[in-house]
Amino acid sequence: MILCPLVKVISIPYLFRMTDGLGPARRISELLVHLGRAARVEDTRSRLTAAQWTCLRFFASANGSTRTPSGFARFQATTRGTASQTIKTLEHQGLIVRHKSATDGRSVRFDLTQSGQAMLAEDPLRDLVGSIAALDPDQRADLLEALSHLAASLAGTRQTRAFGTCSDCTHFTPSGDSGYCACMAVALATDEIDKLCASYDGPVRASQMEEGPTNDRT
Image (tube, helix red, strand yellow):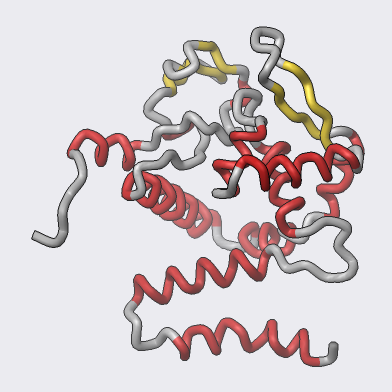
């Protein structure tokens, strides 16, 4: 137990030494993976597993059409069955509640309960959020732009969809404080514009789809 803090302190310098000869792209990739794992660390004080925290955050930050079992499965890059088990656990604990669709009896969406909202105050991700909040505003803006670009680029390479928000989605047309989604053919409420959407189509992916797949082996 005494060694745990020391491991956390030396982990990033050790990572840079291990990847020093791999080039900047590889080093950045390894560091992103490391930060992801470090941010979702579990200990005996946590009342949820890493997957359960991810699920709770997802339903707190996704829009109404995305807060579904299939939406979470895609976001978590896991099977529908695995996603459903995680969802059932949070539902059993009273952290989320399901609502049937008014137009499709087979569809459901999930919302956080008051207990679920309160649980977010214990989210282990808050340490990373605090570190990012301490960055210079220009650094935060550049980091957000770069990571959004990477997510859309990776999704385009793998012919999948990235999750994103309306501000840079090709389906979105702003109108005052709200806007219109051409994909869903609906007007969007102001509070939904900054939420995650499974129908997101970023400019990077759109340009890749227009150009078609490339073959780097030729």
